[in-house]
Image (cartoon, rainbow, N blue to C red; front, top):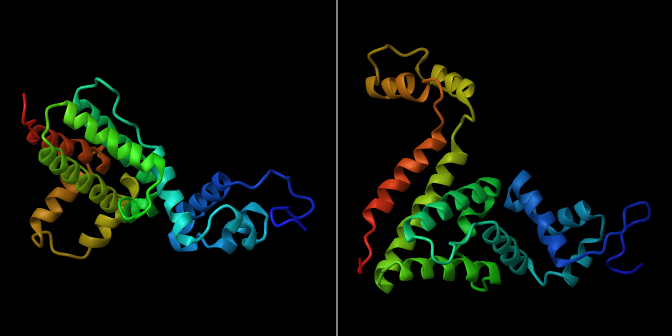
Length: 222
């Protein structure tokens, strides 16, 4: 049997690097990064695990490809766009991409052999800032603080023990239900009057913090 041939009865779609990486990302998003083993990826694609090495040379090569694919999902700054709007759109797009692939947060800037999408992304972001009047040093500062905020917010967002208002109410009841009403008054106040208010969405906090950062960034040449 050819190493890439799928078992009889399965649809014989040619195996490729793109398919291997896509399958790995699906598994990582469903079950966590550690679950995206060669055996699990092979099972998802209906091939022997060893056949994957015709398309990815190692675990590190697989992770490089996965991270590069996430960067490819993030909106690039448009040429000529104002730097602040470009950074705002890029931040929301990055948060959305990482929300789809939370396993990637700790890997985004960890690769020693970044792919084309990764390099293109960083170059475009820096280019937008430099074109907007930022010095090299200030552009580096801006990228650092923006990425720290985006990655940190996603980490906090995906770690929350609730996903909607009903679940938030259950969590609050579990925390405060048996406590005297005068215990932890400020925590109770923000939970009951803010987090449990109609229409509350923790994700809305992202725009508030992002606006503070963008308003605090000032180009060297205005």
